[in-house]
Image (cartoon, rainbow, N blue to C red):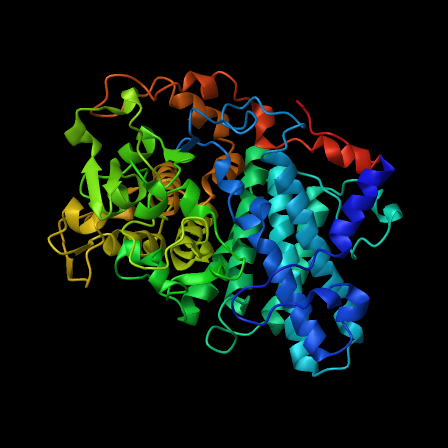
Length: 542
């Protein structure tokens, strides 16, 4: 046990790894905090290293989107230690352990910056900005941790000895108080878009995270019957409104261009994890989610297809909503260089195995001679403006117990954007991603809804579905279903649901629906943590 602990501490103490593409790499010889945080340059490098923590597999690279929901599922041939069928345990090392380990490694790196930067002799404004960035990273990591695991140890400073590992879990309420406090510091000291280097946290990123935290906390109070959540929903509404009114972000005109690799950090991106090929900072997003292929998938821009779309997900879209439906849930396969085949033209049906894909982060068609399947730089969009509109609409609906004109405006903005098509608007122009763009506006697609005719429940149902339609495949659905208390209900719903055009329910869905239970609203604490921390306790049901 002692050897395991020693390895764990070494990983944490020397965990400053990599960097994003906006600053120089942290020299390995200066990774230890006592060597790094000695001057302004070291402080900058240390915070840059903390950003690199977000690139780890268990944070924002590949692990988080493997959790099964009603709109995404794992490939039936690989359920990653039971996470694909809700039979996972605390021994799961494929998904559960990396989520815990990689988040806490990042927390430690952020804490190293937070603990050491105050003593560095440097410009006070830059010092506060770097502290605010480190606190933003720590807050984002802890927001994920409490949503995954519930009560977790809240670490004030970096782990530097074996004794530091022996700590109990802190209540979720306490963790929220601390990360809200850190983000309020960020609102005061972070820069704004255009004034800071691309990829760094901004004041709008802090406000968006605050809005999401308050929305989540309000939803879970309602879910658990501990309150009406209205004070938190009001805060969520206010912070989202500040981001909207700031005018620094806007919806990209054509939905697929939000995710285009040659359009990274576009007008819609509020905060994204940065990746850069060729320097050891590769993204695995497009490997697991994209369009499957036949033949040499390593050169044709296809995907392994470890994550696929449910047919229910595709059925959630209005028939006219072709751009979002076909971009997010394509039913096609890569057949060769610059060649696609639609499954419906091959005489196959979803029940025969030709499942719909999560195509949002597709890498087809290949446009670069240097394309490398294993070394790609697709960014991970943590927050984008579309979600701010959805947060705003949901929070208002909760505060007012029904929609108003602001809800109508926010939701119709997304419908309006979905009306923009490329070329003649057919699947060909969409899936072949034809360039140069010849965009046009089709008023027949998703006409505005008069939400004044909707009540609270109708509006909430629309928002729940719209979050899936707009954000599906971005590792947000599991969190949403959990905070609404609908994970079990929605997963079981697919057991008997037969979408239009199908003759039977989702293929092999009984493997998920038969096992999902209320205790799955939290993940188990990994067994390895109990070897390192005798004060740790397990979540119920595991």
